[in-house]
Length: 103
Length: 103
DNA sequence: TAAACACATGAACAAATATTGATATGTTTG
DNA sequence: CAAACATATCAATATTTGTTCATGTGTTTA
Image (cartoon, rainbow over all chains, first blue to last red; front, side, top):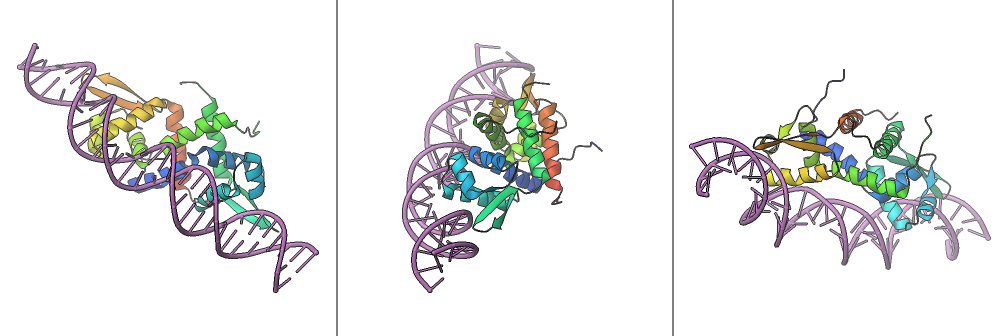
């Protein structure tokens, strides 16, 4: 049930790559910005004061890890979190950081 | 209730630093190895086939972020996860990665 | 079809980071 | 106190990674 399973070295690498992607403030800001509803690349760049190129680069990485997905709507592409797993995890972690208890 | 709270930019930086620490395979292996019960530095190094120096460096970072804590027992220092928050989070994330469903 | 718009990509560079090897600190035992 | 042991720290290096600038791709509108 609640038995702890230690991941293999391979799994650990995969898990680390996901964490690594979340370990950048810019990428986290993008993710949280897209948390409530899909956002266009331009909107992300303008609202977060980032260059369009930079946003695009980060989105590519996030896309590659299936953390976000985007769908075209006319000229724009709207990005949202890939699934509920991801968004739940983000919100959970945010809460973990907010809390300060040591036990 | 289940209202999403978007962290401020400062919180995003702190959150990113935590993720960044978890975003290294070696560090993750160390953490999972110490998940069940405290482990000495030498045991970690030997079991995970890492140099003692490297393990010590990583433990320093993990210690700084209060992800692990160690207490001396004679010559050795045994490290364990800092609190249940951290261990739960690790286990949860491991499960997230293991699951493959898109919904 | 050509121009305008929105986004993606490639090359290049600076900054951050993991790892190593040598050395220092602290603890125990003779 | 000296030697042995376990861990920590320092300096240096090699790799990774975030960011920028210039350019490319695809979609819409005139």
